[in-house]
Amino acid sequence: MSFIRKTLPAISMGAVLGVMMSVGGMVLAEKERSASSLPLEDLKAFSEVFGQIKASYVEEISDHDLLENAIKGMLTGLDPHSTYLDKKAFKELQEGTRGEFGGLGIEVGMEDGFVKVITPIDDTPAFKAGVEAGDLVIRLDKKPVKGMTLSDAVKIMRGKPGSDILLTIIREGEAKPLKITITRDIIKVVSVKNRMLEPGYGYVRIASFQTRTGANLQEALSKLKKESEGDQLKGLVLDLRNNPGGLLNAAVSVSDIFLNSGLIVYTEGRIEHSKMSFKAGPDDALKGAPIVVLINGGSASASEIVAGALQDHKRAVIMGTQSFGKGSVQTILGNNKGGAIKLTTARYFTPSGRSIQAEGITPDVVLSKVKLEKLDDDYISIKEKDLSKHLANPDGEDEVAKKKAASVSDDYPLNEALNLLKGINILRK
Image 1: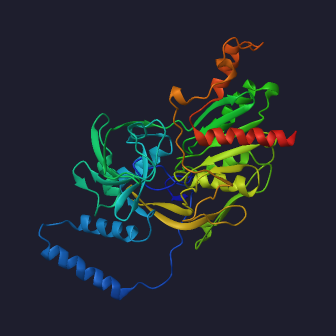
Image 2: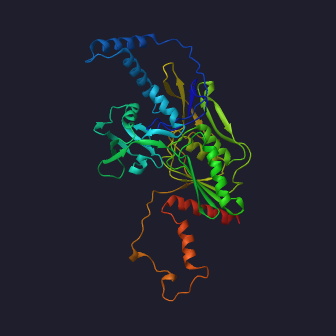
Image 3: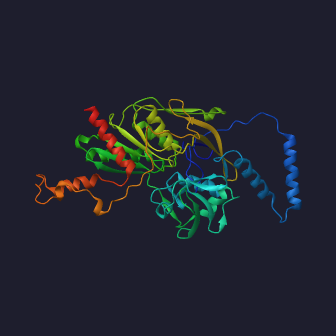
C-alpha cells in the first residue's frame, strides 16, 4: 500500500515497483519532519566521499548524478519497496493506476540481486510468451542483471512498442536457463472479467485493482445475476491468482461488496497519517451466497487484503497456495523536480489483526500444483454410451454432452472451487 504527498489525492495500494509499475496506495499525506539533530559526523564522512569521487573517479561525473545516485542508494538499502522515482518513472507509475502503460506486462521485485517475477499480467506480451510467477531474470538481452538496481532493470525492459527484448530466466524445476523473447507493447489491463461456469454459478477474475475495479465488479455481478435463475447466484468463484495488487480504494470496495459490516483493513506506522482503518457498509451483493476465492504465490498486496478480509469474516473459503506476503505500506512523496520517493511508512493488518508481511495468506483449502493432461484414447474407460445398442437418453445425448462440456475445464483449481461451491449448497439444503 502507498500514500502520495501533494501530487495525487487518491488512495491506492500496490505490490512492488515493476515493469508494469502499478501504484500502491496513494493518499494526501503531509510528512512530519523529525526534530532530531543532524548526524554531523556521518554527514562529514559523506562529504569526504563525495569530494574523493569528484576528484579521483576515472571519468568526470556531475554533482547532480552523484547526489541522485546517493538518494537511490539510501532508499534501495532500506527494503525492496522503497525507491527513488525520477520524473519519467513517476509519470509511468501514475499511468499504471489507469490500467494503460507501455512495457512487457510483468510485476517484478528484486531477490538476491536478480529481478524476480511477481506475476505476469493477464493477456500481456509476457503472459503470452510464457513468463511465470517466481521466474528469476538473470540477463536482459546481453546485460547481466546482477549489480543493477530495480529501476535500472525496469528502464531496460521498457522500450518502444514493437521492439523485442530477450529475457534469460532461471525457473524452478528447469535444468538450464530459459531464453524468452518478448515483444514490447502498450499494455491495457482489463481489471474485471466474468462468465458463467454452470447455471447459477458465476466466475469473476480480477487481474489488478484499478480506479474503477469496484464499479466494474458490481457491473459483472449484475450481468451474472441476469443470466442466473431468479436473478440470484448460487455461488461465486473470485479469482485473484497472479493479481499483483493496485489501488487500496479498489481493494476496500471489492471487499465491501461482499460484506455487511465490520473492519476490512487497518494500517499502523510511526507517523499519524499512516494510521488508517476502513470498514464495510451494509448490503452484501450476493445475499450470503457462498464464495470461493482463488489465490497463489502471485497474489499480492491488495489481493491479500481482500482475501484476508473475507477469510477473517468467514465470508469466503480461500483456496489455492500461499500468497506473496506483501504487507507493507508505501508513501509516495513528491518533490519539486517532478519526481518522488516511494517510502515504506507502515504495515497493514487484516480485521483480526494479522500481518501478512513476509508470510502471506494461508488458504483454508491448500491445493498442490497439478497439471491435468488428456489421456490417450486407448486408456479412456468404456461408458454405457459406448456399448452397442445402448438405450438413448430421453433428453437427447447431444444436449447432455453439450451441458457437460460447458462445465469442463482444464483449470484444476477452478474445478475444485466449483465443486466446493456445489458441496456447500448441498449441505445448506
